[in-house]
Image (cartoon, rainbow, N blue to C red; front, side, top):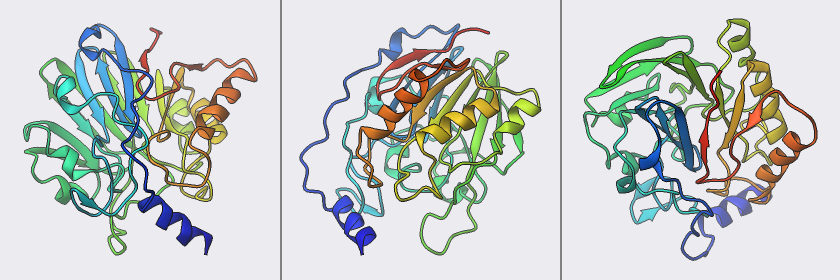
Length: 292
């Protein structure tokens, strides 16, 4: 029963307080005429997208899982968020990939204004009904949003994952997203195993400037989570110009060592010349996407 032993250890790990990341972004200095960002932990990415503040899958809780804080039945953070909620300007748009607890954390979402625009997957709006402006998207659907600094287009993309929050709600959707503004684009892959679906971006002339790709939790869950080499392959198939990893270093959701995904990703980029550029590797590092 190795999987049961791993799950027991994941929940009752006995560690002390989460450590601080080695880097801390200075988001208040990011310019409004560029595409700048940082992975704050796991799949939580803060972007300044030409003056528009976007936050993906915000998770700031010490643990994720069912329950009421501090009694949460789930894994504990290895790293503190690179920024706390009060340490960056409020997001204009929150993007949610799917309903899993490590991506849709209702306790973290309570910290943001009810007027924040939220884009989420099909059949998940019941989990975020505290917000006044919620838009559900299914694969292939797009929405054009008007924000305080202009237009934003968000398109839901097919990924290879699943969306159930609990055992019996398998009807819920699960998305990646293509986020477009000011002639530039970001692909936030959310959570995915290997799939050829991202190649459609290149085929449709939509190759993203930045690919935010998950790289961890693949051993033994390779059917649900891609490994670093597969993440790079999918980004290259999409024609991405730059790459930033997510879904690693924060929660131990699988058996591989915590530092292995980043080391394998670094080797994948160092081992051969690639047109795609690795902009950041670790939680808290600030990246700026080069212009086309």
